[in-house]
Image (cartoon, rainbow, N blue to C red; front, side, top):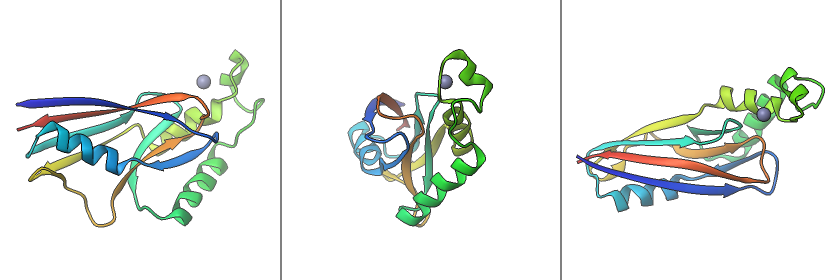
Length: 138
Ligand code: ZN
């Protein structure tokens, strides 16, 4: 069995951003040499997500508006922020949008359903964050 690990570093301009990382994951699959296997992609921070959905900017705005309704930003809104942090909302947004995705690798390629792409969702950005790609298979 082969295994391959790669880290992608992110530093977003905005506090909230959704970034398409599909091509970076595809290039990791190519580098791994794995033809049949599994690819895990996860955010390594508790205020950022990795998720799969459509690459459509209106939908991305819908996601950001939806999570803002569920967990609006507000320094005095969350018990977590009593610790001196201001990102209580970002922890909740991350949880609803998910930590990781797993995609099958078939014939050396990510075996997506129609329109599926992989996104990094940032909810407390403007600082360096990491995404892990772990590929196993043959
Ligand atoms: Zn925090």
